Length: 584
Image (cartoon, rainbow, N blue to C red; front, top):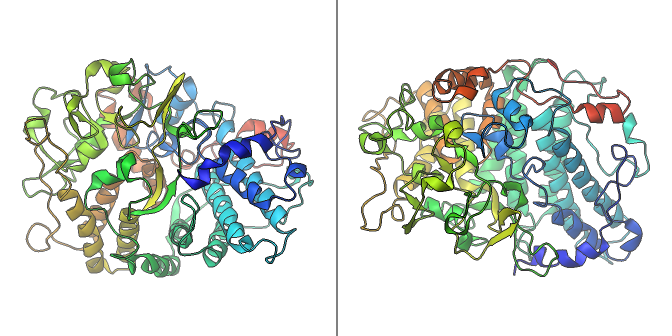
């Protein structure tokens, strides 16, 4: 039993369901009533962990496929046509008609501040006890600062300007007096500095190994310090355009990444097969995992389990093999095409996206060779579901084919016989969610090395990831033992199959990052950091509009669409004390 979630049923007895009329100026809904737990400080910490994964897709920052993949060239919304789930996601997907008043922007904002409040309450409670009375105090404060920093980081990625609320703010303060954009600072860097300080403090407090699965440890904090510094390094102007790349920030980030890579082969490393990252039987035993969210089923809680509500819309639809709902999140045809390889087994960087499965359905899979990660990321009708050659995916399990095609995203999904599925109207699973993996650490290192003009050194981490992909074909077979697709994936060999200069190294790093993390909610934020959203998204729309009519309205407007608007409901609650993002 996963210890950190096994006591959620106990915590549920001490959670009050207070309504919330304003933004955090009263006790928010679903937070702990402090009077009930004055002698149980650990319970406040557990209640903060308990909030992870309890919210549906449109609220959760922990399963942001809708914010990071659907708004990029990774994936389509899916579901039963463009109107399914209302207009909000459709407007996000095409970047048109998205307003501060539209659904569902208020939901993630509200949820994240409710969660931040839980973290702060836990810290306030721990301030009332001594290390002697509560020996785990410093560690638990580190855990709460880590979660609080992560939530503020997601708010920052979503909205750019969002108030930073920490334990120095008294619980009864009027939160409406705290602006989202402090006029005393020239730009948004002060918010990044607060996030960075929390992650650094967490790293200093957290142990190398936690006693309980599910608690964040030092490596998780080290990784997030590096990640934060990487975002800080790409400095933006008032219109969200990258104006400078701060190499000192990148050099500092590299020192933290080196703390992780020096452990390779010991505590951390790549799994031998890429598939291990997406199968529940490997939960909590993957050496690749740096930070892993814990989920459970049949744990005695009133909901039937602490399942992953953040991706509950994404399972196949219609009863096929026991799956019931709801068919969201399809890999885009552009994403599928990105897995095509050349005769040398390298990516097709330039004209990979001319023709897709939509135009070449009868010959597509025979005509091209593919990186094996295609089949770890995407399933099409007639192909094995989750590495089971006896269970072939069928067209009838797909909703909205005329609008979203045939490519189902599968990383976040499970085999129907896993014993980890829960149906409560929608369908959920209890496979753990990997928030940080060692493969992306290697790619972060490559990115930094290239920006620091050390692109020759970037070859090794890129090739490590690529070689593992090439080796990950054992489970990608049909019932007769033949490969599902024609796989061809080679490492980069300067002077043999490529010319390894700075431009090529960057292109290889970006592509590798794209394939490795496909449909996992990362892509939009990478493009946001690099300052290439307008170029990438408008090129995507120009091709995809010929495949699906609804995409024809899509257009990315630089200086506006890099971030969501601040929800108008929140502006109203603070009586106009928030500054709206440019363009809205």
